[in-house]
Image 1 (spheres, each protein chain N blue to C red):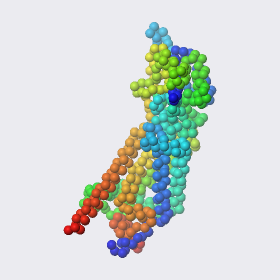
Image 2: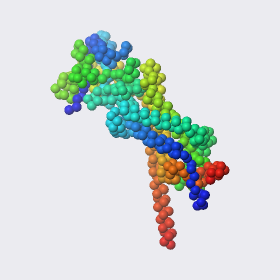
Image 3: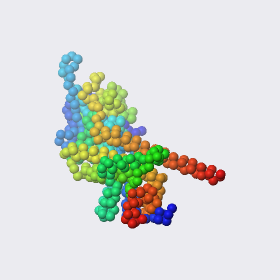
Image 4: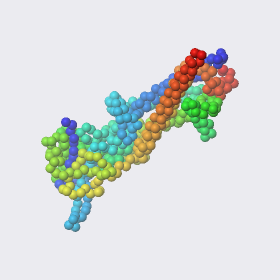
Length: 248
Length: 242
């Protein structure tokens, strides 16, 4: 059976040590000021009036219908069968058509490579049978990673044992490969996905140029096909009247 | 038909004919491969199977992009070389007779084209197409479109292929924005030409087979020229070529 890799983040276990961020930056040698993952602190007031901080470890959510894949002109953004969304550096031009469409702001242009970077669930590590760097170093055991299609896996067991939420809204529907356990609390609005925002050029190409091209080319082919048919009919009629004439 | 009307005269040289078919072949290959490169569902024009098929055949999109760029370079260099070597004898006279440069000329050509198209469908038969020169209204409009679009396609294509390697997109966001505009213009210019090419191919293959023959042999009959391009016929007569 095809694997379906998922990341589970139990926010009730996160202690904000940021070992995951350090491990990720070390693993991928990200430039100063850039990281493929993060921990978002969300402050609120509890029902009893006490201040509260919830910690949301975040990264690319590896969407089922990834908008970045749809927006990438060259196929550099692509999704593997096991659900991991990857970037093919050899194909990525750094045009950033994919950057604003990411509802989780997980993609950024790497100043060292000139290509777009994002979390890949540490694809080279997991292909070697290792856990992603962030999972390996998570001291609180908040992050778990594995194959949700394997009923014997830890993530399958945890998915059954606890209640899990995904960062989706009515505007950004569809599943992801990332789950959050909040201990029964609602997801705060700040961690929810932002609406998908296409670059102007991508919007124009997809919503103006391509539809016009379809109508234009299709319309011309249809019109000239009709002209050809008319020509054949006219010729037959002319031949027919000629024949009748010759019989007289 | 009188003997002088049946006479064939040379209307273009062998290199011009070769350039036309070289251009047509490049276009066929470049459109097919270009439609296979654009992969994202929200950006591609071709059905999803086409990029999948072509990228599979070429062993990945990187190879397909390289192939497209190589053929594109061959196309641009080939035409540029021809323009350079035949500037005075072929290219300049061609540009002079085909380019539509003023609004009045555009209106005149658009009207001639409208009548030609209307006649195809049996409409406006009582209004004859005004006498045309070497290139008729539709050909002049399409020719002008193709020349301008080809310049846009060559420049934008060059930037799409070379830009990411030559410029630091992370250092200045305008390089990336320029890339995205180049992608949009590249596609739009190609689609515009494709719309016009439908008519070009129809007229050559269905309506005026002699024009297709003349693009193979280089010769056209005087009768054909007299019928379709009376102003050009007058010019040829004045210069003693017919």
